[in-house]
Image (cartoon, rainbow, N blue to C red; front, side):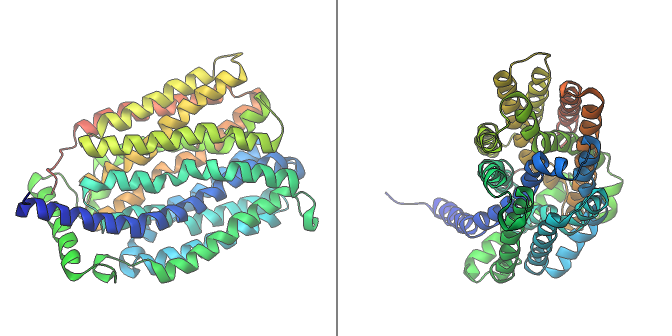
Length: 439
């Protein structure tokens, strides 16, 4: 059976993107996995660290949240630097720095040192996530981007699937080894792999398709042509902002900040407090807590991948993101029902994790459809900076609520409300997004 020139071209293009994906995405996934393992570690470390250092829930929540203050101030300049230096020379040192700082958390002695290390960790890590989202726009058109972001962001739930049983084992079995507490071993074991991955990044990661040694010239030209065609379509449709100034005066960008704020509220409500919820409702054994956490985050991983694939196949973004948020809002509300059995509460929070984690991944298809050029670098970082203030607010509010009420009832309602608002704003914002035709 003969193959038409068009079919041959489509197969050639598909083969190029498969090659790019297999070269880049497993490595970027592992890097993000390591970043999130550090965040999972602090939620497990809390089970021992809080008692050892005599911290209240409010103090510990503030320490977990202060991480995002560094994010807020440094993400936009970090992404602009990436555009100048390139991904390899910027992301590699970032990973080395956060590995060192994360490991140094093992030396904290009290509130002040805990706050200082968490703030510094936010500063050094701030350029990584928005940098990778921007980096993907150097390789992929919108046709592929949501799926690639979803693959990359599976590092969030998978980090919990992988790290939770290991963290539980370390807390239970490493306490006292080398005169260190179990929580100190957690931070040390989480930081060292990030340093190694940062060194590998300096050698492995190409800055752009033009600098990749494993693409032929014909393949490089094809990728560049598709990206240029997409930019032309955006300009013709009038649907994109291209200059840095466009970012800060765009109502749509500010509403996307609101959406992401609510997503982050829910995400870190789960990441930082779910081990504590399980400890209070199901078991106090840290190793069993680790294995139980595989359920909600394993389900969230599957939901994220399937939803990302569905969104890319259909080209539909609005209801994929909003529907996931509304699911999360409903599930948080169910988990807050007074007297709900521990197993039923865990099931509800499993659905909450599926909704919030999926929305977290698919959300990034929205800003990358309307931002390009310098505006993409600044806009992605700005949305992530403002949105991640939810990571500052969420643990502080939950810690304060727990100190006042000694329960998670009101805290879960706060997380439900945040997800509900984000879902409703998504329906409004995405309705106004004019979808350009795919290249």
